[in-house]
Image 1: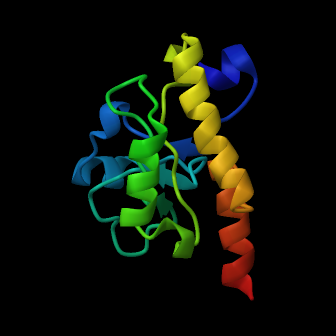
Image 2: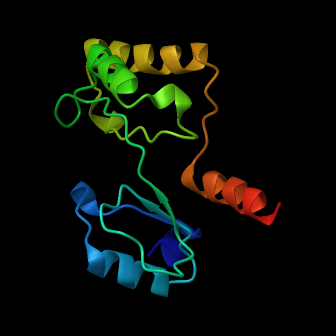
Length: 134
């Protein structure tokens, strides 16, 4: 659908509701277009070329409910400042009230103040690939 209807290819896979298992990590690598698995709990098979992105820092207190204080607590709990990357998983299409938008803005402002670089999963893959070649 994406290639035919939208004229672009997906390079990262994240399962609905983050529900993945060993079948996910077996089947997804069979598609050569995928480079990244997002929030996959199962271990990737030996020799798998896919890069897992699992350093989740929770920003929502329930689907579509961003909460800055919850994010801050999780950021500190996960020692996120020392991690090479973090995954922000949210549902911004549900941030429909001024309060929700403000909570999300606080999260982003905090990260900007920490000088965090924002990249998408494919950019992460390309960055990791360059590092692996060095």
